Image 1: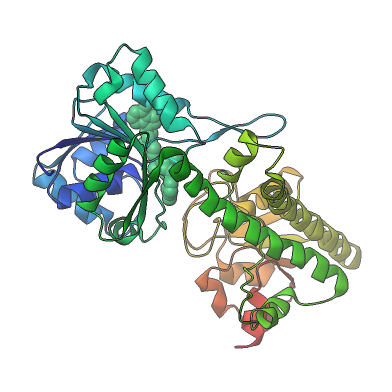
Image 2: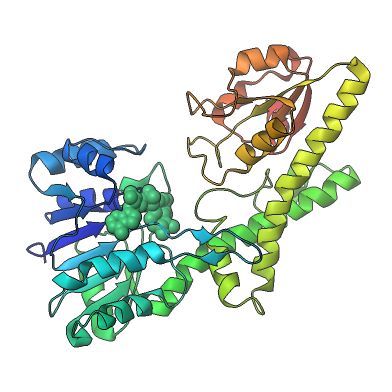
Length: 409
Ligand SMILES: NC(=O)c1ccc[n+]([C@@H]2O[C@H](COP(=O)([O-])OP(=O)(O)OC[C@H]3O[C@@H](n4cnc5c(N)ncnc54)[C@H](O)[C@@H]3O)[C@@H](O)[C@H]2O)c1
């Protein structure tokens, strides 16, 4: 298998680690990305994203002549499509945008030959693999011996290199032969189980995994709203309830962010709004939780300004979409700070994982503790565990359970 040439299309968080791992397993990789700066950086053996161990993999692959990146598409035997799949913003249910996937497919049709394998790794709505084949057919290629399969990615940022190699993988082809060919390929570089299914089941499987997380976080967020009204500490409640041997409630927070869990459930809702009622409601609850947090902050600010007769200073702890990462994509914490800043509140952010921000005012934790009238805990970063609640005069609003943790220290 290692004598096959593999073209990895889209060299971002998923494509670049995949290309680098394949090189380590003996493949020759032609990486393709439309972004010239990305291609230039990779060909220097460097990386343009933050991910532990990735730079070592890329450097040795480039030095060994196994990885070369291009801005134009290249002929290969196996094509792996790892391009973005966002949604179209607009009124109503967000609709998936698979334009990048279809564009990438159009770009390779002129190279396709009998026996080639086209694998889609991008998170995609049901039916996208079938649409890839239609695009290939429409271009005039004989599709009788072109194999299309879907294989979703389920890595955790920060552990991508280990999880790419070790996680179980779901592989679904449009035909049994395509499934078998794709599974045989993955077995050459994945140590986890490679599970074979149909393309549509594999497509739905990825969306299901992320919707499961979203629905379960929505349950925790809904509990947090009810508990606040009742004067019950939701984190204590969840801890107690989780002592039931068959209960495992997740943690509430300021909403749900990231480019996966906050996006992918919409792909199911957009396709079947009539039946995807729980999934849609979960999305709405998690989005509403962010609005609710903003309202709570405004109420607290109004209260402080009545007492002090001046404009209170707000310090928000955390901007990332989850603890201990630097990724701000779709982050509820960012939305909250931006909304307050846009409404002329005197708001600052403490985010230990980034150094600068284009529009938001960043401060160190120490000075925030000194000057803030209101401290708002939005993300449970490990640096905040050291926070001494007695070292600040500020009122604290805690939306992620940090205080329950500190009180017990
Ligand atoms: N990042 C993750 O942790 C993660 C996890 C699971 C699944 N996914 C899914 O994987 C897919 C890719 O995500 P990502 O985070 O790697 O995106 P990314 O934005 O980091 O990288 C995508 C790259 O594709 C390039 N590109 C766009 N169109 C192209 C084309 N036609 N030809 C060549 N290159 C093109 C872009 O320039 C970009 O560099 C998405 O569907 C995402 O939902 C991501």
